[in-house]
Length: 114
Length: 113
Image (cartoon, rainbow over all chains, first blue to last red; front, side):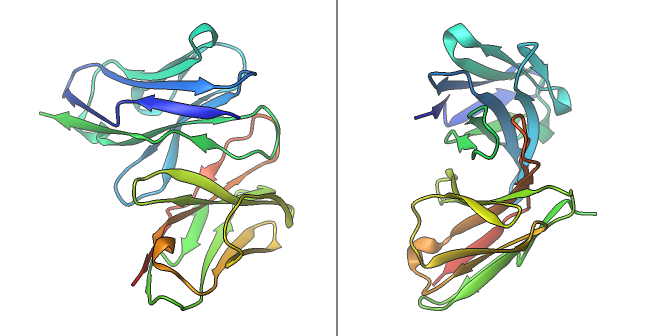
């Protein structure tokens, strides 16, 4: 069965610092990979996804993630944090088969201080 | 023009009551989902429908019954509500392809007293 591990339930950075949120997956076959962001009392918004092709994926709001098959990782990064980036971030995987559900990690709360 | 909408946004009710949550999507998608987010923010799939047909039915109490009157709507009815049902329920939709992206609604925050 597939699973997702997000290392660090809470990450704190200063404004302007690098953001690194870690995600590792467990799967016998490379799945499709997603990062979603959830702002307080809101739904989930897709940041970026990897399905096939280029392993470095760029998303919205300056975020990017790199799929590393050898490390079974899909870490999310942003060069310079903004206060508005403070939110809950979820890594998710899905088998590369139509109609399957997302399997989520437990989430990482990102705090940004001035 | 909300892509995936849910009503109500907040729902406070007593144990034992029956309640429904509605979801509508205007993205033209053919697949819809219900996810539950618990108090620790963990998200887990409950159900999924494709063109009104149930395709995912995870192990949830049979007090939960989804209904899809058409491919743009997916409702969730909950009978005999329990304290443990308190959670945020998210609807999502996608187009059934291998690399589909699921788009989420704003959530319904259910509190059972």
